[in-house]
Length: 449
Image 1: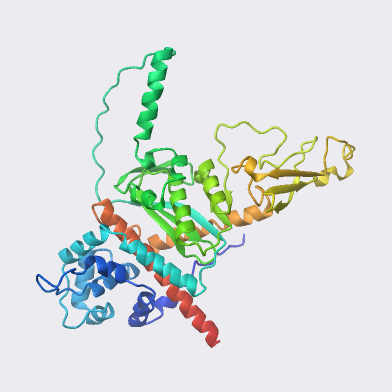
Image 2: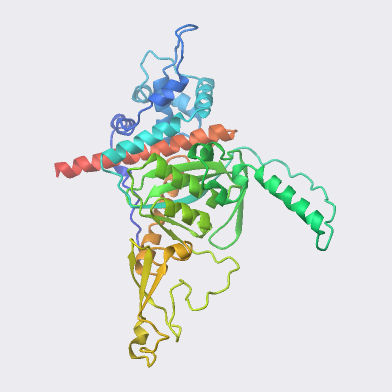
């Protein structure tokens, strides 16, 4: 049996072959940390003098991720014992080494702002301006990360009074409906249905995300439930360039589908020059609201169909292509962008069929995708092109694996959700900056050749 070797995500060895000084410079050259400095630096000339080198402290936190230094205390020890590493992090020889408490206070200040998200966006825009990001397909997926804290003890459930059986009276039902509607209106944004996110501003979508550690559950490859206490990291990745174009950090119990619309709106509003044609996701994102948001962006959805107690459609196959009288599936031919119509042609089996010229068996079948965005996409479900685009979804899974294996994503040691998000944002930033450095080096090697 032949062994199929999957190509690597990108040649990270290009960076590790460099001397540390050149490697760190290559990574940090693509990062503008000024928004973070504006948050942590003194705002007034009054008061005690500023003795800490905040620029070097921020750089050291980024390098900590790429060098896989798990704890802040290990970073401080490395700075104390390795003069070359200290200078590579942009500290002066005369600078005092910051303490763990100094790093903790700085991380707290960063966690109260959106400075890291601004820096991430600037790094991505720099990569786009240099021609390294021009994706037409984006893949979205989530991965779980365990928290350092122990899970809280389970509380004993309070037994509720059994509900009264039978149909409610008309007056009781009207009152019950009013109370139910009022209760749903007052729910937090991410506890409502996904459709409620469609017309919410991006700033509110991002600020309302729950980030405290919670119990999460998912099915593994064997179909068994896996439980963890911690967080979820949601990524939108360009399938060709392999850059993270948007990310979201949430509690572990957040449904994957509830993070898709904030990621898609983020791409639409923050990266208007990135023209996305397809968005591909697994069956966990099979919600009509997500299809609608992708359609609003002028793109097409390539999402695995998740059958939800639905009966099989009559006159259509499992991919919702029309069938002939003998139940042979019509073949997907093309998509008309002007009329938003899928075109299907007669099956091969109808060539010698005696009913081929009958009025019941038409030669061409057309279907508007707006009839049901969830079932009808361009390219059509089950077609070769649809399957090719869906396979590109593996890019986001490989990025998740790289973040855990090379960028400390699975080593979050902060005790609060806000500081854990800062760690995730540094991981996101370090990954994109490393990818930009590798693309630049590869481009220079190509020009030299």
